[in-house]
Amino acid sequence: MAATLADVAARAGVSTATVSRVLNGNYPVSAVTRERVHRALGELDYVVNGPARALAAATSEVIGVIVNDVSDPFFSIQASGTQWEAASADLLAVICNTAGSPSDELKYISMLLRQRVRGVVLTGGSREEPEHLQAITKLIGQALSAGTKVVMCGRPAPPDVDVPCVAFDNEGGSRALTRHVITMGHKRIAYVAGPPGNSTTTARLKGHREALAEQAIEKSVVVHGDFSRASGFDAAMELADAGYTAIIAGNDLMALGVIAALRQRGIRVPEDISVAGFDDLPAAVDVVPALTTVRLPLDQGARRAGRIASGVEVVTGPTRLWMPAELMVRESVIPPR
Image (spheres, helix red, strand yellow):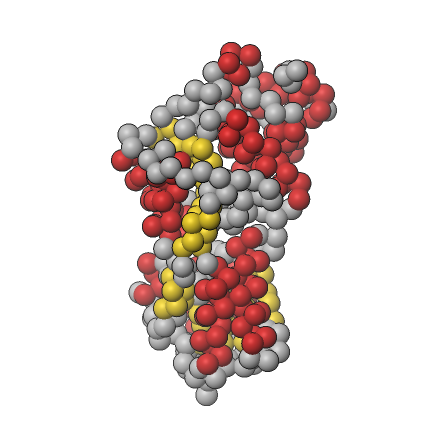
């Protein structure tokens, strides 16, 4: 039997009016309550109502793109690439900015499914908390049942979920980057990682540690940021006087923050401390010194995801579309003094 509005309200512990407000988005509801309602919607496989269920197999001319922060070049490049492919297929791409909120990610996916979108592209790292993965799994199941294509771009699919994944080689790229820094003679290395519990953070940190182990180098100190320039700045202020000869950041934005902090402290890059990043964003080659980093084919991967979500390219099941990483050796890493 199909779940009713009352079923959702009972599961979430709220009134049916509150559920309606969350679904319609026409009345302020607290973030905690919204998250409970969206979780209940996913657990009960609730779409919207009887007529909507009858039309569930229909799809609109819209592609939904879930991004963490559209102001971050990493995500704006992917959003742009996906949008370009959607437009080429005469479809509209709707960019949903979650600001890193797991509950907002669930909310936007639910909203897109209620609009019966043609496809959904989920970009960037995924949260690794079991509860969130379970909720995402249920929403993906709803999408596939309704005929909506789902593509993961730069993030793994939840366990036992068979959808196409455009996979960037975060682990291999990080391993190659750390090997390069070690080859240049560095043994005292600090690492500024992304937020814990994020699949991209986990993969890049794993590659970094594998390279250290290969060279029998002691574990580097790890400081966690949030992939923002500000968090890289704060991490470098903490690490500046600890005697490290190299700082590797988990992405380019944090690396730029590291360089800014070191300069503020009167520490020269790379003469005193070498700095490396990851992603090869446009600013990486313009900063002085030019940033040693890892290039990911973000635009190429996003376009591929856009074509699949649009139905232009037919890929079904748990296909893994591998996007290789490339080490970009520049001036920000030199041998230690």
